[in-house]
Image (cartoon, rainbow, N blue to C red; front, side):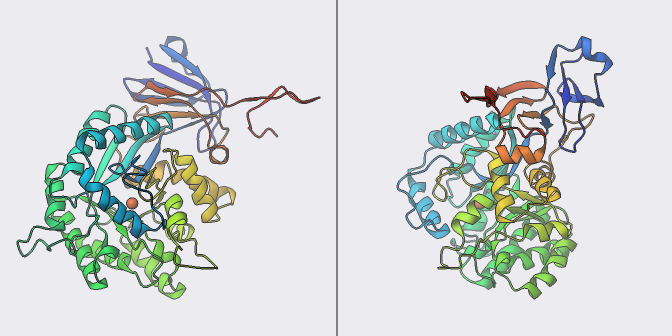
Length: 436
Ligand code: FE2
């Protein structure tokens, strides 16, 4: 007997009238029309022709800072650098309990929004490992409903923060290694925040070598500035090639690529593709934080998403921040993230809009190396039913998550969005769906 049968669903690839059968937390069948087991399922759900998708995945977040907006004060300039300074002011006041409480509250929002896998950076600069211990506890607590992957993120740099790990001086590099030894999954970095370009490049080399040594994935904040000469992604690709880390390394942000010389980019893209780099762009944050030193015209400051995709690399859109020192908005809604990415990158053709949906679902799943993700037989029964007829409509409407399942069990549901109308000679309600 099946645990769950969802029928009359439309899938993101356009197939409609589809049925998805679930047993023991896994998808056992994906077929058109009813399956013979229909009568023997414990729960049968009529999707009503709406979109059934694998869950949203966020490849870039900061769960240690989330929901701390206003503590101890607000970011006045709106810049990345004031955000980093503000986070530094907050750090001495952080407690384990408050970190866990805020992270769990965000995870509630995530589940309600069908966001069931998150890669979160965690600041490893503090030798006490307070934030690391807190997020490791959160990871364990939410494991039944969210795959939380942690990145050791040296917010204050690995070389500028008191030593390079080779001279026996405790510093950013040692703290990062300590975080990995405690169970953090991925090696992070922040080369553009090191003191010089040379130190930035040296940090990339050091961190990639560490990842190769320990068999870890890499995800670095890289070139998060409008400086066209910030080219650490070149070193990241070179080191990836040199150390044979192909397919295991991600460059996050890469905003300087927006401002780079086109000839240089024509040389850079093949190097990145050769290294099979993955890229995470964070549209809400990039459009808010970048271009702050410009008058007009004001640069958008988001990396070259369509061009990187066209070069064959995997690109995801991340949330990055939600109500923290860098960003006052956000709610864990990856469709809002996809919508902003679509607009800023002008990805308005039908295939490009579809790619924007992929950038918050299957692309980040690939970047996280998630096991069992997808809408195929044998995959985990992690599913989201959206009040939309296709992925493009889902982005347009930031569609209501009607039902969210984790391993076949219902974990969240939201009533359909319908407005009652009182108009002469018009329907009595609308739900904003496009009917031809
Ligand atoms: Fe970030």
